[in-house]
Image (cartoon, rainbow, N blue to C red; front, top):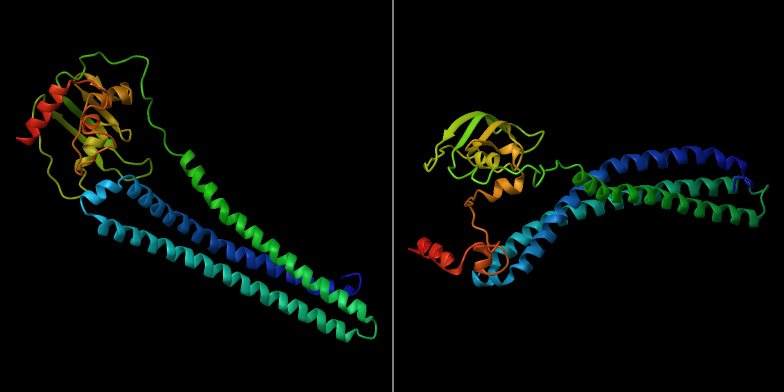
Length: 299
C-alpha cells in the first residue's frame, strides 16, 4: 500500500500511536476487572461442588432454599463482574472500529485526490490493503489484551506458590512420650498474627493455665479469644515462648503437637464417612469406648 501511495505512511504513524495508547489504557482497566471476575468465579464453583458432595445432608435438613439463595448471591456477584468485563471489551471494539474507519476514510480521500495518478486497479488494491491492515491491527491489539487478561490465572497460581510454608510435620528428634500428660500451658510474652503482614491479634500475652483447670476467656467479638487456640495449635507461627508442660511447642513437629490436643469448634463439622470414622479416624479405640463417649454426650 505504501509502495502505491507513499503518503499513506504519514497517517500510519499516528495510527500506530493511537492503537498503542488505546491498548495500554484498556489493559490497565481490564486486568483489574479480570482479576475481580476470577475472584468471584471461585466461590460459585466451590459452593456448587460442596453442595453436590453434601446433597443428602442438605435434603435431610431441608436446607435447599438457603443453599439456593447462597448460590444465587455468589452467581450474582460473578455475573456483575463478567458483564463488566464484556462491556469493557465492547468499548475497546467500538474505539478500534472508529479508528479503523477514520483511517480507511483518509485512504479513500487520498485515492480520490490522486485519481489522475492512479489506475482503478491501484485504487481498489489500496482500499483492500487498508481494510486488511486494519483487521491485522485490531487482531494484534485484541490478542495482546487477551494474553494479559489470561495471565491473571498465572498470577493467582504464583500467589499460591508464594504462600508461607508451615513448619515441618515431624522433626527427627521427637518430644518425650509423656510431654503432655499434665496439660499445663504457659504463655511467655507471646505475639501472634494470622498472616505475615497482618496486624497483631495477641500482644505480649503472658499467662499460665494450670493442669486440669477450666479457664474462661471473655472478650468482645474480634478481641482475639480464638486466636489463643490458633497460637497453641500453631496455625500460624507465634512469637515468644509457649510451653506445654516443660516442652516448647516450636520444638515439636506439627503432627506431634496437634495429635496431643483436641478442640471443639464453634461450628460443628462432620467429615465424609461413618460416625465411627469421625469419632476415631485412626482406629485407636474400641467400639465400647466409642459408645461410652456417645452416651456421656447424650446424657
